Amino acid sequence: RLLAFVALNGGRVERRHAAGTLWPSGDDLRAAGNLRSALWRLKAAGIDLLDSDKFALAMREHTVVDLYVLYGWAGRLIGGTATAQDLSALKWRTDALDRLPGWYDDWVLLERERVRQRRLHALEERSRELARV
Image (cartoon, rainbow, N blue to C red):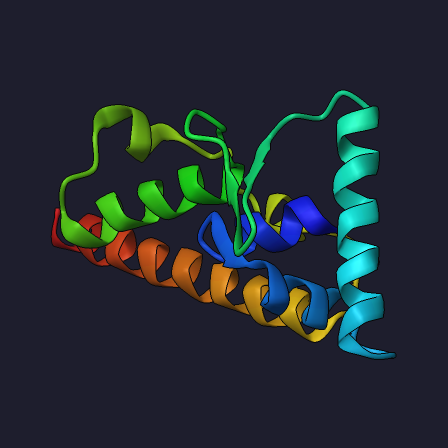
């Protein structure tokens, strides 16, 4: 959940915001403790995708996040700069957009809808382009 939260928030988030959102019940100290525990469990599992300091968490510089790839693809279609590979890509099928299935936190639902809307906008642009041909 922690990795997903940081990734879905642009790859960088304040520790306090992450703790409060992921562990909303209870007080700030307990949420901060839960965050520290989650960070420790990630490291213990050999998952080294986050940089953290006293104030923030961030995805490591060269971490590839599929959501960012999707947004890049959609942005190129919307902006009219799509490559031949972008135009032939059917990798962004509807089922590929069901991020974090079974997760119903507000922050997940919001991002899931944002991704659907971005994809829809990109496909509408592609449809307009094909209709002109």
